[in-house]
Length: 349
Ligand code: A2P
Image (cartoon, rainbow, N blue to C red; front, side, top):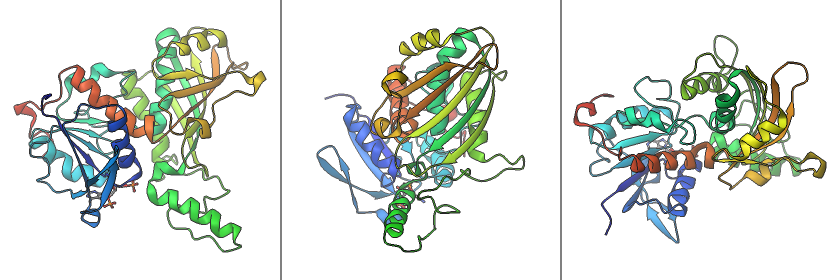
């Protein structure tokens, strides 16, 4: 029998939580027990795990005794409320929300990019925003090879990033429109079916959305290089799974399209899929359900000296959320870091 390793999935009934359970099982994560938690509303309900089912428990401040790793995907306010109690109980937290990402005490980690940041963790590790994760696995090798000066990114983001209720809203609106009914609008500020919304998360003082500023700030934190400038426009599109991104990169050193293709072909977590003559390029429908981040349409930006354009697509629920979080768990085990030091237990209370 292997050493005890109890994993809590907090938000287990949600879109990411369900994928988390599937990812833990599919990757043979060495858990001796997996416990699904959600709100009181879901207590007693069942969620699939492998060939069987697990019974959902209500998440409370006392849920973490004996738990080694808690993966949260239950929204920022739930994380802010419960994660400090998990750490107090000696349980390491990997959090999918934005709540802890820019907190200096919390590493923000994409295992292919900055696993070394885990070494300094004090109990809470933040999982970056889905749009940031898929962009940065492709940008990191380019930054290492040619030093990135500036990134201009436009996203085309799937509704699953908003959770189960948004998946249902797109389904319902499509059905209503085909039945000549007025679509009900509840989750987004406008209809999402057959529409594109240049609005993800709330607007900030500078007229960018919070989602756009997450891409800017999180990229700098993960790369550990404030000289990298990122400007983003984030749009929600009527796609169920898979975020697409048009990314323009300006570098200090010259990198040809062929060199970039060769570089990214070797990059961990990245698959180059780039043969425009054969109409081969990454698409959300192909990326859905996959672990890799797909990069295609790689070409030189002919308007500047050292620039590249590319199209990056990944499953936002897998690499953008569940898979990245599980990979963080795997990396913590590999580095023997799945513990909270006694002196760190009260860090977040
Ligand atoms: P529940 O289903 O009981 O509401 P999604 O991102 O797909 O909307 O899912 C959100 C997840 O977060 C769900 O599992 C949801 O559980 C969970 N959740 C929301 N609020 C809380 C809370 N206060 N405590 C625990 N889990 C919560």
